[in-house]
Image 1 (tube, helix red, strand yellow):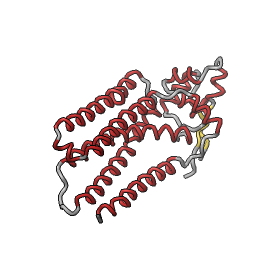
Image 2: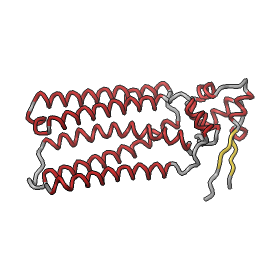
Image 3: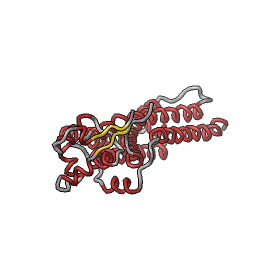
Image 4: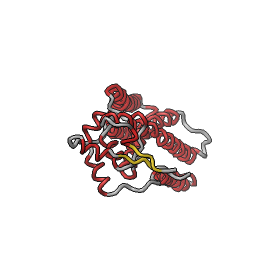
Length: 196
Length: 71
């Protein structure tokens, strides 16, 4: 009971910290004067760079895969996932399917864009900064896991093995989502404050 | 350290070259149109390579296109 009582504010704290981290990062990156309305309109009328399009697709695939697996695990429970072979295989198939799609759309697409010369120096700079968001997202995911598992299994003194797989899988998906988010955030900031 | 600024004449040069569009210039120098938009408004400082490619497109020297304003 005590564990359940504390898990909500602790998870809430992690969420608040995540939001604060994003806000601080955006404030740090947006120290430049905001673009005028005319400049913004001109940016908006320009076609979306190929990397930005791929990042949207990456976010859709990564987010969709994550949401689908999370839905299955929340409705069926981790214990059933561990004991029911067909459920486990279904989740693994969704996970691998998402990974293959992400690799095809984002990573292989990135290699193709590079070969065709569709990536300019600004795209490369945005891509190079995206691991900042990736690492922050993974740390937040691990913090959420740590707090929720501690609260759930504190009295038992041990965490079931199944969670090792779930932690690993979720970190992989969060890495993919973080990469797409990092790229999109880079373009979003550039469209509002430019780059220097 | 005081912040330096790099101004450029890209917009004027585009119009002087048969009203070249931003997309045409982007295609010629190998960048996106968004980059040209940011460059024209002084919101992006290009690499030396891109600066040279832009200057070459207008058949000018780099310092005729870009101007360093600062200390």
